[in-house]
Image (cartoon, helix red, strand yellow):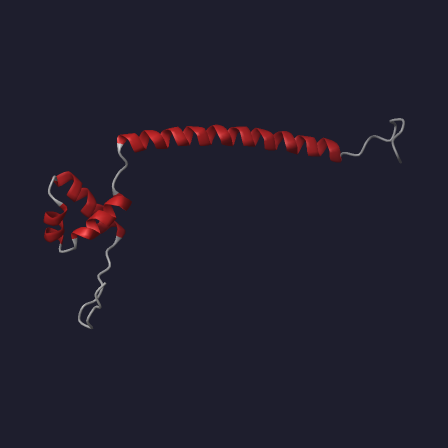
Length: 105
């Protein structure tokens, strides 16, 4: 990594700029080098931003849907278990009525 001279400052880009740059690159069909020259940034930056900001592919989106469905099913199962445990705890923590034989006063 090269040292920056006092005149050179590291430029910071907003998330929206990064996202727009990636979308422009992907929609244009041009090379990363061409787009980076147009935008005045390094091509390596575009590749890094693409990993973070590019939309998921159809396969990735389907995989995410499958994972979401599985997570929702697991949540429903765990929620049901929690509710059963709450009811059980409530029943066990109740004091028995005094008129039941064998109960302590």
